Amino acid sequence: MKSQILPMKERLLRNPKAFSITALFLFSVIVALLSVFLDPTRQYDPNRHQYDPETRVVLSGGSGQPEPDALRFPEIPETLVLRSIVAASDIVITGKVVDEGEVRTRPLSLSAPDGVLVTTTFFDIQVRDVWFGNYNEETLTVSILGDSDWGVTKPYPGDELILFLRETQYGEESHYILSSGSEQSMLAINPPNNRLYAFDNQEGSTVFDGKEVNVLKSAIEDAIESLSTVHLEPGKTLVLDEYIYRVGLLGEKYLGDKDTSNVPQTDEEESQ
Image 1 (spheres, rainbow, N blue to C red):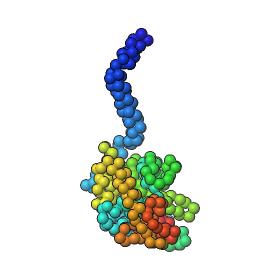
Image 2 (cartoon, one colour):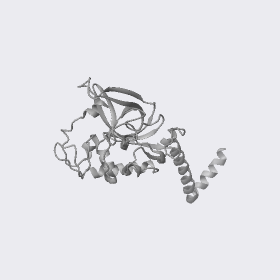
Image 3 (cartoon, rainbow, N blue to C red):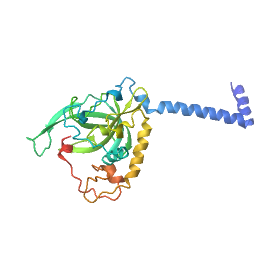
Image 4 (cartoon, rainbow, N blue to C red):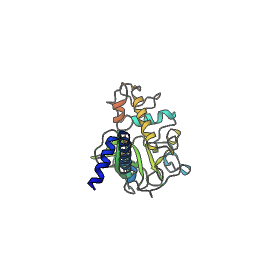
């Protein structure tokens, strides 16, 4: 075997062109193999729920029992929707829904335990990747308003999601909620081609239907870059002409001149 290999080695060394072609071929094979084994979509369940934009159900848009549009950003220019949601977020992640969700009904505010009750559904999420912000754990819990019939549209177990989240506190319990409080903060990586599906039906969200995942990530990067041009007046959490409705950690980091020291936590956020 050695006598056969050595002449081949010598021929390659004597013929630089042949050596280059062989090296390029081997490099291409290695890259192809790595792309297959490192591809995160290999972890996705091919039999997970497949969403159809033609039958999209948006509970917070009035197709369920809650007050229509009570928790949604209003209709705003398509180019500003993503910027507002990013500014409201602490983190943006991709992750898998690992359970059917736990429905809990409890006081809207701990300061008024005999007051209004609110129902939310808690989902455990296996974190695939942290696109923006800081999060170092393998899982997190997301609370979504309502149950399966009202509130905000719920994902299915096994769904691969892209989530815009902000951390909230309920007593000593810390977990995450959707940054906008609605479907605008949630997209699915839809089988069979792993293209995007928007849970929301407004144009600023549906523009991503059927697009590759990296299209959304690039759009978020552009939105973050544009935040440096947005200026909040001291103590303000709402700037009508810029459509910044809440300020999360990403907003604090990337917004232009701002003072977010007086941003209050609402009872709605506390309950979720």
